[in-house]
Amino acid sequence: MSSLMEMKEVFHNADAVCFDVDSTVIREEGIDELAKFCGVGDAVAEMTRRAMGGSVTFKAALTARLGLIRPSYEQVQKLISEHPPQLTPGIRELVSRLHQRGVQVFLVSGGFQSIVDHVAMQLNIPTANVYANRLKFYFNGEYAGFDETQPTAESGGKGKVISYLKEQFQFKKVVMIGDGATDMEACPPADCFIGFGGNVVRKQVKEKAKWYITHFDELLKELEER
Image (cartoon, rainbow, N blue to C red; front, side):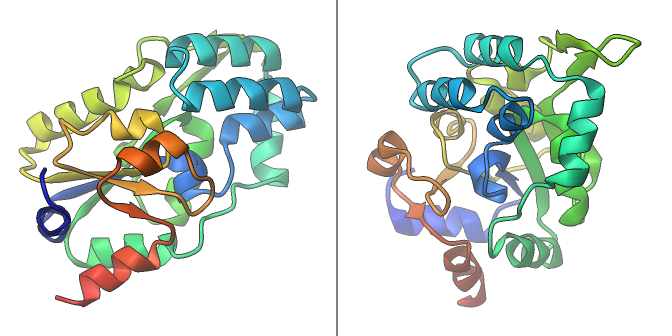
């Protein structure tokens, strides 16, 4: 996608918009919040920073972080009820506007299904439109790993999800919006990538993204102007 004008054209005519969740749709990184809640916040936040900078593979970083946290089913549920994810200002209005225009909205996240489903419900996004990682638990609720077969567990997984959506629903124009390296890598197959720095600025993304925003109002304005 060459010019900003052409990218804006794609956004206006999108069949589907895919949002990353952590530090994009919500203000925090879900895995860091879970780590804090389980008492290993600092060590895991450092691992997250390295993963987002693209210096280790996503699956290796996820395995290492979860190995440290080892969250139980009860801890995950307690986190959601006691510290629910905070929506980023403007996201509710933007998703609502996209829905009014008949655009399909998906949440494509390296975070955890149970947390992302909670976010989807707040935004009236069907949980069938959520692609995220699934934690596994033993029958007594103890941590048993994560589902490594989910595409979002891999580096390049978000791109795989977008390819699948295009094939499955015959979408012609798909936009990916996110803050991190894994979001930017999803374009292509996404037809346009919009970098988001409203919660945290990833230097590599800000430098390389041709369209970079810091507030969702910028996209709302873009839709109102036509």
